[in-house]
Image (cartoon, rainbow, N blue to C red; front, top):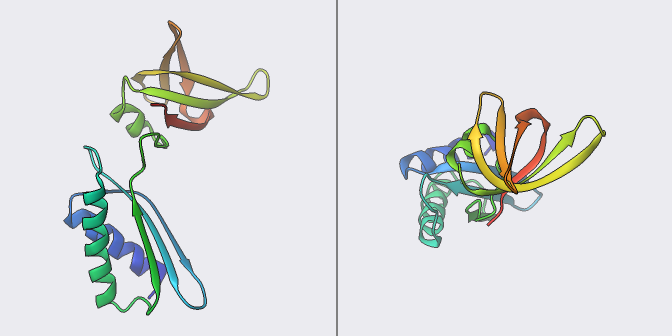
Length: 147
């Protein structure tokens, strides 16, 4: 079975169970296939959610005979999830965040901790120590919730 087909099944199961896919990694080796999936939802993801998704995905993968030996790991993005899009910044508005971004003037990276105040068309406003700082999304090196 190809990576594309496995990815298709991963997305299908998520859609059928009303989950979102945060991340998927698929690795083939001589003897097995390793599949790592991070599921998400608009609410919280529990261990039961991961178990349910894992069971359903396993059943479907078996029906396609993916491999005699495969490793499946299902998890959530976690409490300190990475914010990879403006949509995620918007979803977690008012949440504590840690952002590493490029400071073009000093040609270095800066770190800011604060709360997500506002999401604009191509930037994010963070309030830190009473100061509001606007960061262009393209300048963000990495951003995580910071609970």
